[in-house]
Amino acid sequence: MFPVLQAKLTRYEELERQLQDPAVLADTTRMLEIQREHGGLGKVAQTVRQFNQLEADLATAREMLESADDEETREYAQAECNELQAKFDSMRVELEDMVTAGDSLTRGSLIMEIRAGTGGDEAALFARDLFEMYTRFVEKKGWKFEVLEISTTELGGLKEAVLSITGEGAFHQLQFESGGHRVQRVPETETQGRVHTSAATVAVMPEATDVDVEIRDEDLQIDTMRAGGPGGQKVNKTESAVRITHLPTGIVVRIQDEKSQHKNKAKAMRVLRSRLLEQRQETLNQERSAQRRTLVGSGERNERIRTYNFPQNRLTDHRINLTVHKLDQIITGDLEDVIQAMVAFDREERLRGNVAS
Image (cartoon, rainbow, N blue to C red):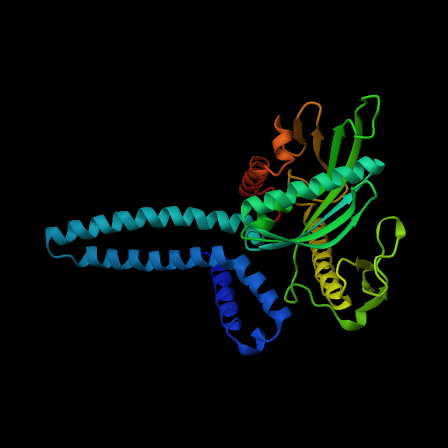
C-alpha cells in the first residue's frame, strides 16, 4: 500500500546508513546535503513505519480472532481488532494526504529570493518588510534560515535577498509565496499623505541536491571579483565575490555575502542548482498545463498574487479571494492562517484533479 511513500521510507533508510559512513562524515558538504534530504523525509518515513507496524499488528489481531476457540478470547481479539482498525483508518487518511501533497511535503529545504520591483525606494523598503515577515514566521515555526546573499539600499531597503530555509514541511507551506506582492501605503518619505503603490517579487524554489540536478564542470563559467556595497562602494580588497554562469541555460548567480571566496562559491552553487531545478519543473508544468492547471496560480515571479493595503489594515490574496483585516499582525510574521488557507485550497484542487502532481 502507498508504494510512493514506501519508496521514500526506503530512501530515508538509505540516507540513515550513509550518515554512518566515515567517508560521508569526513566530507562536510556531502554530509550537510544528506542531512537536509534526510530531515525533509523524516515525517513521511516515521509515519510510514508506524503504518507498516500497525498493518502487521492488525493482521495478527485478525488471525487471533479467527482462531479464537472461546468467547472470552474472541471478545478480547474483537476489541483489539476494532481499536487497531480505527487507528489504521485514521493513519491511512494521513498517508493519503501525504500522497496528495506530492513531493512538496518531503522537501524540507528551500531557496527564497525576494527582489524589489517597481516603486523605487518604497519598493525596496517593502522588500525589506517581506524579508522580515518571512524570517519572523520561520523563527515562530522553529525552522532555520541562512542568508545567502543580501543587497541593501542607502535608506535601509532591500534590492535583493536570497535565503535558505530549512525545516519540516517548510517548502510544502511556503511554496505558494512565489509571485508578485503589491503594497499600498503612505511612504515614510511622502509629505502630503498620498497612498503609493509599489511591488516586490518572491520566488520559492526547492533546494536542489546533487541527486536532483547534475551540473558538469565544463558547463560553468566562474568569475571572481571584489565585493561591492551600497552605492557601488567596495566592501573589501580581495576578490571574494563569485559569479557563476551556467552556459547551457544562461542562468547567472552572483554571491558576495561571505568574505571567503570558497564559501561564496558553495552558496552560489546551491542557488544555481535550485534555479535549474525550478526551470526543469516549470518546463514540466508547461507541458502539463494544457491538461490541468491549478487555480492557486502558476507560481511565476511576474504573477500578482497578493496585495498589502496598510491604510485599511487589509491583506488580499487574489488567487483564492481571501481577505484578512489584520495586516499589522501578518507583516510581523503571523502568517499561519494565510498560509494554511493556501495549503488547504491546494489540497482540495488536487483531490478534484485540477493540479498536476
